[in-house]
Length: 291
Ligand SMILES: Cc1cc2nc3c(=O)[nH]c(=O)nc-3n(C[C@H](O)[C@H](O)[C@H](O)COP(=O)(O)OP(=O)(O)OC[C@H]3O[C@@H](n4cnc5c(N)ncnc54)[C@H](O)[C@@H]3O)c2cc1C
Image (cartoon, rainbow, N blue to C red; front, side, top):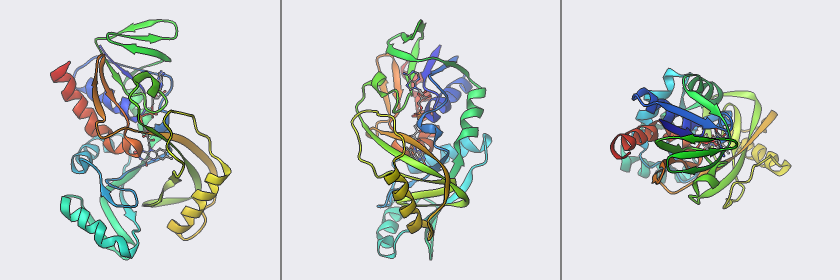
């Protein structure tokens, strides 16, 4: 039996991939997703305001297009309205890698193989096809998990409990709070520069990193910041009908770490939806060979 701790995008995609390969898998989680309940997620290979191409971007794009479309509609394309003076620098980075499908137009950089999706149907669809036990994990050790009132034995345990479970894994890392406005307008083509607008969301973070997980709720200054950034991105101040807040968890690029109990798969920052299908495949290979 493999127990996957965590039912966010990382845990669910991993559990489903292991189950498809013939393993008996149980997901144990306090609830369905935490940070993964961000209402809309971008799948974006060209990151930030510097246009860095994500590590293993080509492989991650191939894996995600092979995975997500069978679960839900994946909305193709992200427009990055890069200021004119930065465009040659961005293009040089893209040309160096050579494999990110892109074009430039007046508005900026169009990434044809990037995408966005609504997360709720994805999490729910995956969970329906898996055994999920709702329970709080107190401690993980080789061969067993301590739950609130019982002990669960497992040959191999995979930690995928994200930011909110990070104390269980003790891997350090950075925690970045952020929020999303649920907008009255709908953005069919995702736009991202500083903040992102896609579907019914406008999201981003500017708050400082923290060294431990603290649950986040939106502050009035953050609403203002998002609306100001929205004005720059969209040309008007977007109206909103609700908000969502969460915490990103970032480790170095070593997202898959061997542990005494099995493996830890976490710390993808704001790219967990981008990397989950590729790293689920890497986890499977690791378990097939090493465990
Ligand atoms: C404002 C904002 C915008 C974002 N935008 C994007 C985006 O556009 N694209 C993108 O890819 N990512 C985005 N992210 C990041 C993304 O939301 C997270 O990185 C990702 O969802 C993490 O997934 P996860 O599966 O690792 O963890 P989570 O979704 O946090 O899941 C953790 C799971 O572990 C469980 N758990 C935790 N502790 C315990 C315990 N003790 N016992 C039992 N279960 C436990 C939880 O119940 C949950 O099921 C954004 C984040 C923020 C804050």
